[in-house]
Length: 323
Image (cartoon, rainbow, N blue to C red; front, top):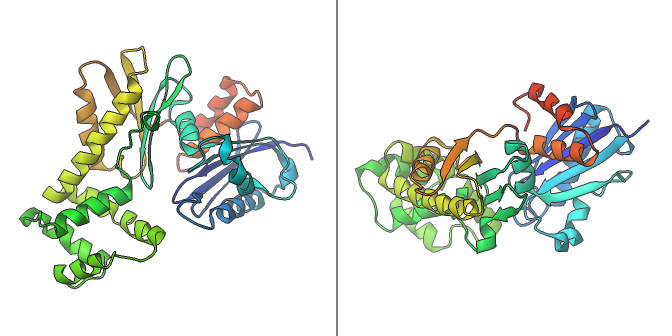
């Protein structure tokens, strides 16, 4: 059988998503697995390979059918990471050309279809990346700026705020959910648990905090003073990162697509949009991502194979729930 399918992989800190389609743009299979970040899960490589195998089985295809694979993997930064990244897609018979990228690259390709603009990601991890009119790729990390806005950061700050005494009546709901999440009977017991470091394993501790972020953003929307202070700080750091990246654009109007559970929560999205609108130099327009990151990986695979942009528009008919 000819090599007539492409594989797109969105390997994030929480999930691995694998999409398979044929060369005409028809979706054949979609599978989801565990974390693809080797910094968050020691079994990340196995998760990615297992998800690829699941998608191939669903599509009724084998590795020899694959014409191109594009994988956006969290934590992949440069060719120096090839020492470990190649093992993530190393399956018997999967000998097609492979393009390994950072997950922000496929997110940009999906959200803006490689138009000049900025993506701001805040979910399990956080990243701000833009591609300007000249095709220059800029990230906030180029400036050594980091927006502490990932899920675990919001949760840590909220817990520290409560334990540090920043409590009033507006925080009763947040505190109740906090105690329930950490299975503490009261604040005194939670304080003792905190003094012991919450959990001896760093990875599991961060996962536990990351899982509490939805309660923080929801509490901010409901008026919790602690949650709002935490979310406002995170939004201001995201604003600064976006503006740093945006300073590399010649155009006055710059599109910004927001991606991730934290940044797309009601309170965070509204707050960040408000801050960006107030910029006196550029007009930042917050837009909805056009496609998911895993579809972005497919678009890049098509591009590598020389499939025209006109053919890529077949993705207008792809199930919106993919990815």
